[in-house]
Image (cartoon, rainbow, N blue to C red; front, top):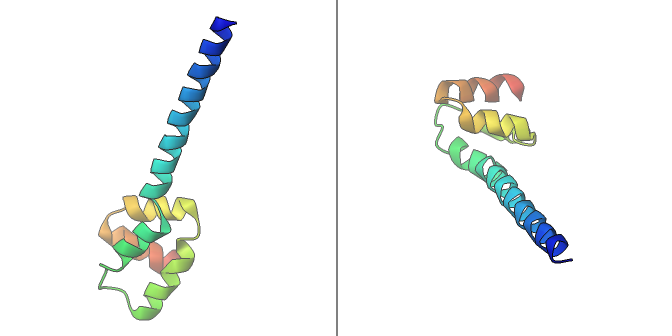
Amino acid sequence: MEKYIELRHKQAEEEMVREKEATKQVDEFSIKKCIDVLSTMNELSPEENARAFSVFKDAQNREIFISANPTARIFLILFVS
């Protein structure tokens, strides 16, 4: 019985670690972070800026946007939105 309890305890700890990592990744590519980066991009018109919000609805687009260089970010906004 003691071995079973140890096993369950270990499984619970591993699950907590996985959940923390998943939360960290979500925070790293959050819509808020994308909007913060977008607000520093003076090259976009107000209309293009507003269209960018639709790009941020998709998790993969957010990850690409945050990871890309500044020029690629502009192209992502202009051609995906």
